[in-house]
Length: 151
Length: 151
Length: 81
Length: 81
Image (cartoon, rainbow over all chains, first blue to last red):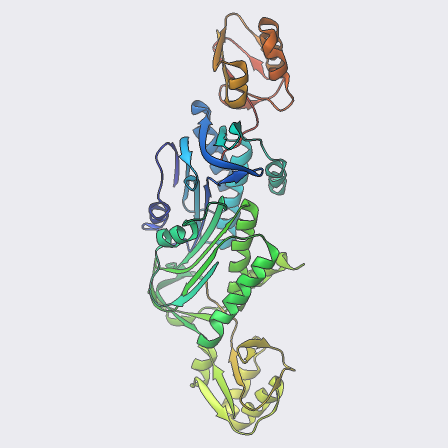
């Protein structure tokens, strides 16, 4: 029911959606999130990105996040893809897709997976741009978003 | 920036996502929701659906919902498609796609649009199934979800 | 003339999608009463607590005024999406 | 032997992605200290408040015990997604 993939290759949102829906007659709700490379960050122009990760730990971390989402909500399928390596502006970095019989569960789980991924999955962004290469700084707002999931 | 379409023809999620992203370099976040025909409702098997609407009012209602979302969050593009007419189980009924520079804004606006659509856009479902044709009953849970958006 | 539209289960129950009334002016509540007087079978379905009204394609209250040329609709709670 | 990995800006600052230590056992905090003693230039970056640690690919606390054969990683706050 879970598909988790850390990869260099691009993904196609239409194909991922088709995989969430194929022979899935009981889940009326699908919530999807896609994160893409923006052309600026903290006010500085960005021309591309290199995504580093911790290979041994990454999939374990993502699997735990998805498993925790399943203990909180009634979910059908979950697909979580995250790219690593070099990417240009406008390319997609991450895809999270969740199906459920219930709209609220699909939305909540999709957002929960992204919020936790943003604060604990071992990925790091190195941006190339106007001012050379810069390691992206973590955001306080990402840590604050986690608080809404604290029981 | 807004694309709103009430139609009988199916839509392709991949094409809608492509339209949200084309030449969109500043919005890093895309939140999407798709509602599909399920094979059961209230415990009864469903074989298909007919969607009725109030043609003069539907697009006006959807436009207002999207405009209200824009007053609440900083949004890039919004695409909202809703099918009417006959649909089989597994077919997609509704698509909501929102882009934003901010993940939380994209998620919130996508969910807000669905929550309001579910309670005020003039669509009605007639399900065909084991027990003949049945008008779907509105859910109290859909009305309750609206309360989270009350200021 | 006031054009009155009915949708979904209400349309099915009344057996008609549209009715035109000459010479009506008054509130939404008064229009419900008038239609119930004209067609006694319509009274119960039209007065049901969950039936909503729209005037000129905007959600209306019981007190919303209707004047000549308006389009009024009555319908059950929506169930799209 | 304990294998120690460094990632992202910390790796760039230390100038290495990996260092192996013979004969270490102790806590994560003690490993930070030991590495700072061995390589004085590493002390400030490794002791920075936001540097996190993982032991055998699970997030670890300062008090987590490390024993022979473990894989330890130090890294800055994550920024994926």
